[in-house]
Figure 1 (cartoon, rainbow, N blue to C red):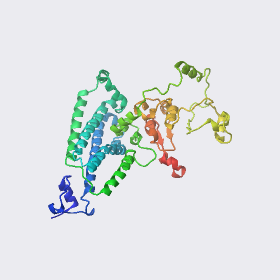
Figure 2: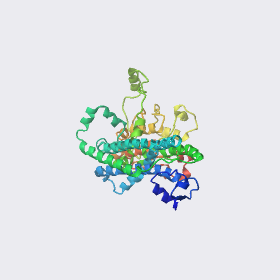
Figure 3: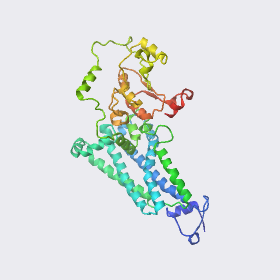
Figure 4: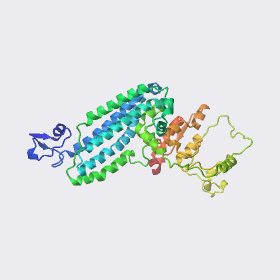
Amino acid sequence: MKTTCGASFFASHGHLDNRPRSEQGAEISCPYGPGTRLWTVRVLNFFVRIALYWLVLFSLGRVLSIVYQFHSVSTSSLLEIPLIFLSALRLDMATIAALLIVPFLAWLLHEFTGWKTIIKVVHFLNYIIIILVTALFTGELELVREWGTKVNFRALTYLAYPREAYASASATPLFLLFLILIVFASGGILLYRKLLRNVELVSVQKWPLRVAIVLLVPPMFFVSVRGGWQQIGINTSSAYFSSNRMNNMIAVNALWSLVESMYAARSTGKNPYLFFPLDQARTESRKLFGTGQHNSLFTQKKPNVVLLILESWTADVVPSLGGEVGIAPNFEKLVSQGLLYTKFYSSGARSQQGLVAVLSAFPAMSSAIHDPRRMQSLPCLAQEMERLGYSTSFLYGGDLNFANFRAYMTFCGFDSLTGIEDFPKELTSDKCQQS
């Protein structure tokens, strides 16, 4: 009897028949070439099924969030609901790529040591991650509603103080959340067993192919986890798409958000900002604040306000500040027509520090822009301008996903955001297109 590759694959249920061909009950005719024994299809089958499983679980978690937070989600157009899943896809795929690293390492151990029971270890670890992911989605249902934030490192630190944590959750429907968690986690494990119960690790028969996989797959994981070849790796900004904060938070992958917050919260245990004794620091700070009368700078009651925020600007090119002559003549003209602050110092060494300082008056002592919980609690100039009846726009000659800019500007409440993709290509440099 002659069997096609597809028929042999589905009949095998993931098992590889290693008997000599003369002892097999069916002759395999395969278009992949003699000797491959369907290893390509079967190896891919293992990883593809795991990837699809995580994608389905993340999507089910978002369905649960949308239903639970429907009152907030429905304040915007219901047509945005499909966009939640679409906007979440890139971050989900990057998270899935990270989750596939352990199964790949297990496959390598199986391949080079013959450790067949390693698949049980993979299943066990995945069960733990399933419980963690379902717990994250469940915990966020009330955390997002009460705190306006996803489960993050700070929220987890409250678990070290169970009495205080319980007191703060006294109004939370704990029984309902516990019931949701049990159903969600049990359903997730059952679905996992349904999809992967009969799938086994399959060996590659040829050593050159083994070496090629070892050399090529790790770089593929690296590229996938960072979201592509672009200069700036993927971050939570890639999931932001709406003026509705709830829709954005649901779109952000829960597991990615937690790991990112834990990475941002890492600390050496020492205060890095103690440069002077406290008394000296207070004395020096008081010198920076002037006293006296303050006159209005504007001749109009409601002027048009444009902030030009320059990257890497320095007094060394401003003659009025003792800098070189002829490098910035147009800026020097503005000096003669306006007000020049001669004791205005850089608020940080990075763009994200400078922007938060300019727009939110937040000192560049930590990366607030990478912490959604802290970010959304900051005041912002755009919000103040809106209260005064202004329309606001933010234009950036680079990728808005850089350093979480899109998320921060969305929280700030700008009416419109313009990034490098909105400018004509002839106006952009190669560096801007990559940033």
